[in-house]
Image 1 (cartoon, rainbow, N blue to C red):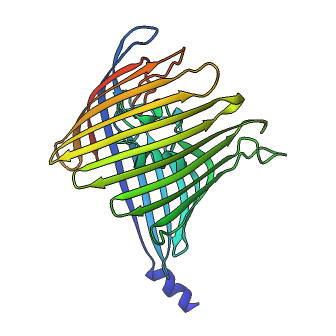
Image 2 (image 1 turned 135 degrees about the vertical axis):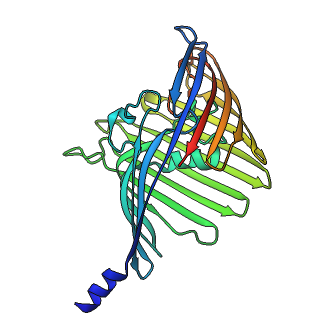
Image 3 (image 1 turned 90 degrees about the vertical axis):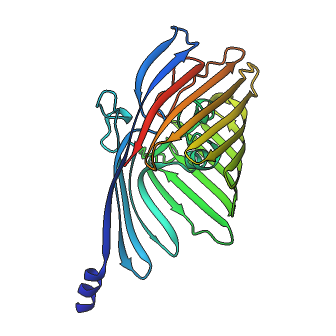
Length: 321
């Protein structure tokens, strides 16, 4: 009994409050309804208020949690459809075995796109998810991340559909295998989403490589989609980042090749300039343009909005706290 009390007393925990306040002016052109200018929230990064914590349980074991609320700074309203912690909400354990967590979380595909593929980190007018499926968050998800060994690490995720009588309905499966060695990172990821009656599914596979040295980084990616109702496509991404002091330049090119008979191809070109006022605050200017073919209707969005036209320009300020 004494040993148990001593162990509990020696455990250490901490909680961090953090967030992002991001607002900008957005100009959409090329839409069916005409040009639109607006003040928008979360243009570079979704505005958020979060809480995260970790408790040392001893013997290398720790408990952790993260609760993250999204909000719209332009109106003060809640994001993600009004969910209290719509951005993330999970709890888990970490140790020598890796980490396992349960809750509403980002899919392995999304984190690969954000952290490895996209120079814009799923924000601004250059956002790769303007064309590539992002599969951002998964409810009811159990995720296991292995430790990195000899450069290799794996990420496995299962999102329960929670439908009585058939566990495959609305089920989500995700996985990523990565190799990192100094400036070099290669990741292979796969995402499967079953439909409401488990009669069909959408599948997306992505192979990416990132090389970062000094002030430069280059990103390459190739993705294959096998969507519902016979949809098939291939996506290629070339991106780059250059940083010099307080200045950062971003650029990317995406080629979407529709493999079906309708051949609705698309191309996106994007560039951005970031100016760091401090370690926590930056100004941004971003431009993106999509060329749609054969009736394709992709729009240029940003970190929060899906956009209304095939060209978008953003200018704004982002503060991290």
